[in-house]
Image (cartoon, rainbow, N blue to C red; front, side, top):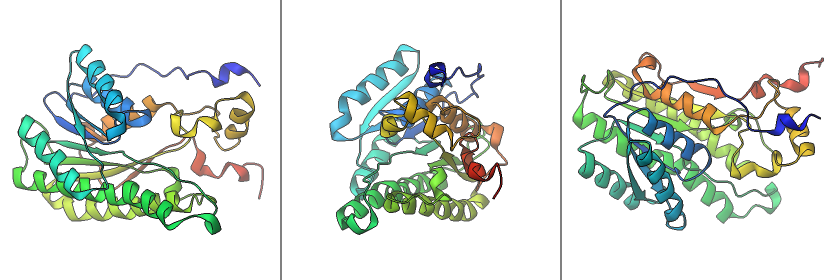
Length: 282
């Protein structure tokens, strides 16, 4: 195959939505999709709280520095999203620093893969606790802040925006990854149920469902030409997604450009959910 296909895809110029003066918490913001989204929010004028774990403190400092170097405002916040007390402290710290928040991007997630018969309860609980319970805890804290503050028309038409990072695996089964797939399937109903409950308060809740994205978590799937070629059998658009593809979707969902959009799962996957194996018959 042409090795140029494996290179970082050229993406079109993008006019960032105006998020000036809005305050956003991005969980899992130190690498991959979270990092790209945090930097993009900063470029769009938002103040960005960069969530990190204890072992990614240095990475968070780099993200904060990049946002500030571009003229933005950022704050590193230590938080394990699976810990209720740490989540409450994170939100309290950001609200104390910036008076409130306007956007939550619940992105933190991980994988601990194993065949079903070999998967330990600890592997199951760890993935569910971070990927699903962590989104619940962060969304609950954000919703409480949005509800008590209400709409500030100088900031946004909505009282608040919650964006859940899901996956194509909220609808595509994934053998060998039952904990991860279950967590993402849970996010589907979590986000839609929250959207239904919070819509009367003008709080919007949506999910982004990435497909194959060039991030550290899945390096083995795209690092070599052979692996990339095999991956492209699952992607009709015939290129891997870049973190910036997801960041642009997140900015749109966070902006007033999508003010009438709530309760959706936005698949950003190059057609992976089109069941490409059936393209030539069935």
